Image (tube, rainbow over all chains, first blue to last red):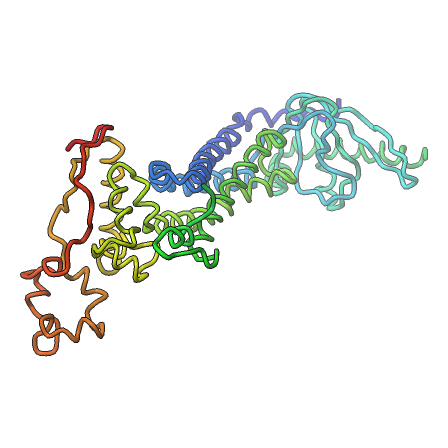
Amino acid sequence: MLGRFKVMPAIARGDWRTRVLHLAQLCIGAVALLGFLAFTLKWPLLLLGFASVMGLLAVGVALYAVVALFAQRTLVEEEFAQGDTIFKQGEPGQHVYVVKSGSVEVVHMKPGGQHEVLKVLGPGDHFGEMALLGKAPRNATIRAVAPTRVFKMSSGNFAALYTTLPGVREQFTKVMESRLEELRRSESAS
Amino acid sequence: MGFVGAAEAASTAPGGEVVRWGSAVDWAIALTAGISAIILVLIVVSLVMFRGRQTEGSALWVHLLSLGVLPLVLLGVGQFATLEYATEVVFCGSCHLTMKAYVDDLRNPKSASLASLHAQNRMGPGTECYSCHANYGVHGTITAKLTGLRHVYKYNTGSYHLPLKMPEPFENTLCLKCHNGAKRFMAQDIHLENGKVSDELRTNKTECISCHGPAHDIPAVKKAASGGRG
């Protein structure tokens, strides 16, 4: 498999952001449910309940802000169902991904409209770095071929890793050269 | 049931009828229910379609709306709707066991009570209870809301006593906030002292209600069957 990325498990400390997101949903959902019932049924007790817990809206928004902030600044775990497209060829690249579980296929769309599956990536494999390193649009589409969980890292964090850890830089450079070669072969074959 | 507010209250007062939906409180109530429903739908969509995702593609917008923008709007609109709806007679009247007799009197076109006369003359349509029982400005509003909270608690725990009694004498200033300066009021010398409202009235030495009562004309209150203590 291409480029096993050994650093990631050390940084990934579980998916706490999803739990925080669910907590925000619980806070805001409970208030919204009370609000809906209070103003459709017009029961004083429901109105009182709604007024009493309205502060949870602010708590929920604050929790979501934490999730959104850390999603931009750190490693985020995301989940895709079979068949989901993680990103499309031609889109601008903003993140690097590492497969935690499941598998994804790398699909290259050729100029004639045909598409070719270049590779299937599994746990430990990474993708998405070429657009960041080459400052170019995505050169392939990535699609989940099974229920898949990935770690997503922002371009800023990737740049920090890439520039400060020579081993990581060497690894990514090798993989990028190898993948560029595959792309060239795919395009010349068509 | 439904999204009705001030217009509904006006419709049930004697001679009142729904002229037009669209007051600020009508909108606030409709928006609160609507935004709450949208938030709930978006949260369900997120749990079903974007489970485990936080900022990827459409999940970003669904979460930004349902957990960021709409809750902040709901916070403002919901507060306004709750505070404004709580000033309406329909809200006071929703505590049927204790308030029904008062609201019935208010809406009785044959009653000669002060409350009913005010309602018949469309003074504070839809918010007659609040208009007379809340004092001036922010301080009066806050006191009225806190008292209202206590009433809801007592009603729902059955810890009230019948017949209801005013915790303290009704202050003339509550009448004077509207009547002071009114042509008919100022035309009565008995109200005045040196061309201004007399000290007797200002200081509650003479209560307005002593000449202009009764405030409410209600039948003898029977002991409520559901826990209210008489």
